[in-house]
Length: 430
Image (cartoon, rainbow, N blue to C red; front, side, top):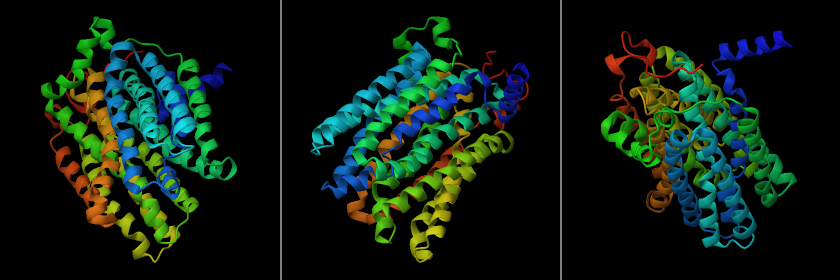
C-alpha cells in the first residue's frame, strides 16, 4: 500500500498538483458541476416561459453583482479567517439561495423573488472556490505555481462548463428543468465533503500568523490596488478574461437557434468548448511557466480571444450552419481563453506578502465578469444587436492585451522564480 501511495504522490508531483491539496481539487470539480447545471439553458428556458431577454439579462446581472462582491470577500476572508471557514460560508449561502430560487421563485416566475434568491445564491461559489485558490497560492512551490493554478482552473471550468453542461443535457431530459436545479444541492454537498472533510491540509495565512485585525485585512483588498497599481491592472484584465463567457449564454443560444441549432446541440457545443478549455488550462499553465506569464496572457489570451470570438460568432454563416465547424470555431475560442491562466500566478507574485489581498482583486475581477457579461448584453443588444455585442467583446480582449503589457515582475522576469537575486515571492509551506 505504501508503494502505491508513493507512486500516486509522485504522479501528482510530476503533474504539478500539490499532493496535500488533491482532495480539494476534486471537491472543486464536483461543487462547480452542481453550480453549473443551469448555465447553458436557464436564459432560453425563462424566455420560453414568457420572460423578456432584458429580464433574463437583469437576473444574470444581479447574480453577477453578488458574485463580484463575494469574489472580492473570498480573498480577504480567506486571509483573515482561513479558507475552510470561508468555504463553509459559501456552501450555506449557496443552499439557501437555491432553495429560495427553485422553491419560491421559479414555479410562478415571481421575478422579485427570483432576483433576491438568485442573488443570494451568487454569494456561494466564489466563497467556496476562490478561497481554495488562495489556499493554493500559499501551499504551492513557486516554481510550480503556474501549473498549480492551471489545475485549479482545469477543475473549476471542468465542473462549471463541461460536467455541468453535459450533466444538464442528460438531466433536463430525464429529470425535468426544475428537478435538475434541485439536484445541484446534492452535487455541491458531495464536493464540499471532498474539499473540507477528506482534504486535511492545514495552514495559517500571514494575516492570521501576524494577528492582523479582520477590518485591516478587509481594507487591504482595496489599499493594495493603490500600493501596487499593477495589481489593479491585473484585476481589470481578469474582468475582461471571462466577460464573453458569461455574455454568450444570454443571447448566443437564441442566435444559434435562428441558425437551426437545438438546445441539446447548443449544450453539447458549449460543453465541448470547455472540454478544450480545461485541457488548455493545463497546457497554458506549463506554457506560462516557460514562455512567460505576461507573454502568454497578452498574446494567447488577449489577441487570440479577440480573433476567435469573432470567428465563433460568424461560423454559422461562414460554414453554412455546419455543426462541426461551429463547434471547431468555438473550441478554438475556448482553448485560447485558457491563455489567461498565468494571470493567477502573475498577480499574487507582484507582492511579497498579502497575497490574499492580491487574490481578492483577481477574484473581484472574476466576479465582475459574471456581472459585466450579461450587463453588456442588456445595455447594447437593443441598439447594436447580436453582432454589435460580439464586436464589443472582441474589442475588450484587445484592450486586455494592451493592459497586460504593463504588468511586469521585477527586472521584467518571465516568472517569479526566474527573477535572479530576488527574494522568493511565494512562500513554500511544507
